[in-house]
Length: 336
Image 1 (cartoon, rainbow, N blue to C red):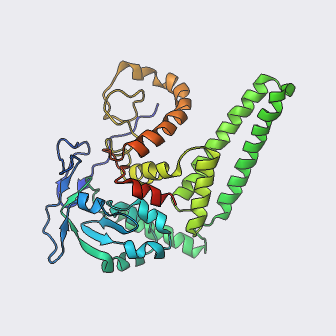
Image 2 (image 1 turned 180 degrees about the vertical axis):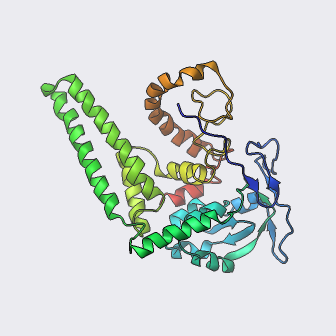
Image 3 (image 1 turned 60 degrees about the vertical axis):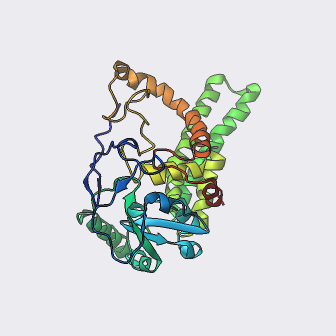
């Protein structure tokens, strides 16, 4: 079983190194959630807000985000955003520093447009922030962008994705047909069992490829297109929740990868989990055998995740991880 390396060092850009395992009991805001102070000099003539105050602006009527230290009211931009309003509402009320950079890799234009939406600055952040780019990421972005431009290729070309999806759905349909046909006694049980395994495999592959790309707005340039593809693959074909996936995967895992206590893909506590996937978890002798029992138990994770779609997303509106929700109205509007 592969063990994840220690989480990368993250810092508050304005407050020096901070431990990645800092908890809400060590640094809490007015509502009991984590709060990390900004200590660099304030920008003159700009109102100051805590991250909790920014988080209240999480609806289509008032949509705020903060990038670095600056707070932006992007409400007027919702219906004009080339990527659609859904992705902006998903990030409403949050720290979008790293999301903004990663979702605009080949252009500087969005950064230039932000200034007119600035309404203030933050004096606290919800989570510590990563070190600023040393120049490496900017260089990689420039080289990758040049690769596509020189070859006149569209990095979001949807055709290869549709081709893969067609093959996957055909294989899934054929294996499902084995189950239906074999249920009438025409096929032995082991053939039907093999068909069930093949169907499950292709159901997972659809999610790992096409749905995943669509959730990152990486299939085509039309927001309606990747929203439809994502919901078709996740909500209809797999029976899970694309909205829950967006909160868990986009906001949590991709921004705070392998940072225990924030990344929702990791166990929520240092003890009590059947898996040991990072070195921050306390060792237990049973983990010596996880390469045996997890091969079976991972098959049941589909049930666990679907239950968590309800318990963590609907009932636990505020959590200590990055996929917290600040209000039911945001969920309803984002799901449109």
